[in-house]
Amino acid sequence: MTDTPPDRLSSNPRSPFFDEALLSRGIGIRFKGAERKDVEEYCISEGWIRVALGKKVDRHGQPLTLKLSGPVEAWFEHPAPDSEDGADQA
Image (cartoon, rainbow, N blue to C red):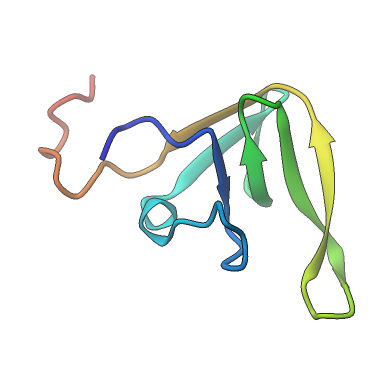
């Protein structure tokens, strides 16, 4: 595993961009300069995030999301399990 998160990742298991192993490491997202904890999905190259729209759900019980555009930065909050503890951290 690399220390660079993928270009696009989703926390919804129905999405083709869902990856349990990467999500278990924790993903930090900075959107328009502010750190966000409520991101459902993001895409760095296209510059957008999806956030839940309160407690509203669609007819299938899935949360309604809002797509916000702007600069997106992503990072892993925890090192990869196969890397040395803090070997490449400054």
